[in-house]
Length: 124
Image (cartoon, rainbow, N blue to C red; front, side):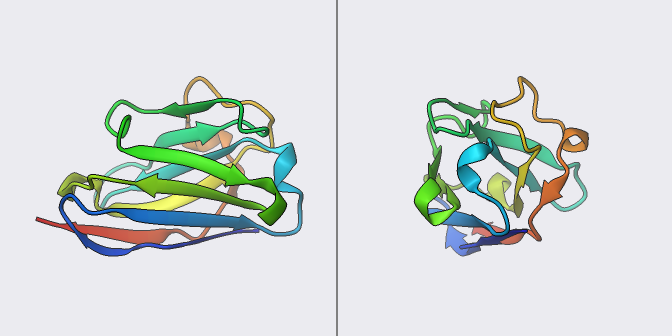
């Protein structure tokens, strides 16, 4: 089970850190990804971190602003979001395909485990 937390309302330029806790399995075996879904839009994959944390990947729209990290001892993956923009407003989800490596393309259909999501609202 994946459970996200840390969402909320923030002003443009602000920061938030999202957390995702995995229960029932050992996080260190799995690559973890973050997705988001804005109202009326498709869910998009944003970032991925390999099981060991040796590599991280980001889509261009968040590169340089968002940082994915993990604490395997706490079974938790994080998404530090800085310089937030109104277009970052969305429900944010963590997910895993139970693999070790990150996929080249983060496609929703490849992921079988999802959290319930946490809402992030960025005001202008």
